[in-house]
Image (cartoon, rainbow, N blue to C red; front, top):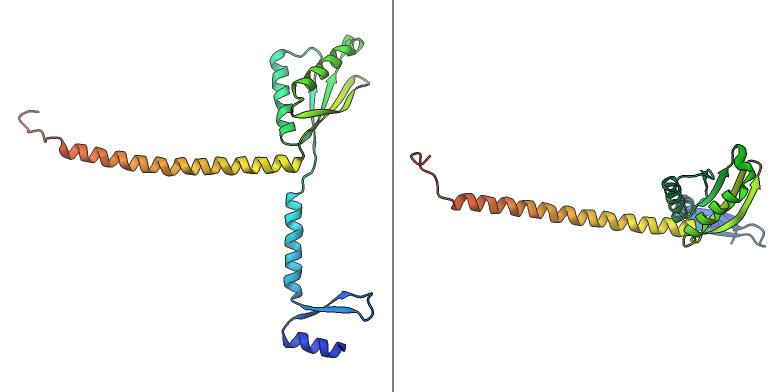
Length: 194
């Protein structure tokens, strides 16, 4: 159809004439509400960005002579990071004479890796880097899966809290009604008995 007629048709329906395929012969155009189209495509892109996950490398620093309680605390942080779907870079820092005993750091990294093997795997084996020994652990589940699980758990907690809130308010009103009934049934004391 001629361009003038297409423009006239678009004006009649109060729509826009949008060129879809410029390279085709003849060029292909479409009648549409272009503002609505742009808004919907922006919303789709926004939704896609929302579901996108950025892999973050968290870092945990240890010393070869770490106390058992401190080790448990650091291990807890590593477990939390892996559950969230993040990679964890573990650094053992050697000082002074500790540098002559790198096997202590290696054993500590192997112990940590075996403690968290159900959540993550060794992505980069321990290697000496000057005064430090570095190992990278990667999570078994992807960041998007971890985010989805966290959202589901949060929704379940919220629903549980709302369930308790409605039960609690019903119980308090029932208790108050029972107390009022008990007060009405109790005989009134006469002034001479008091």
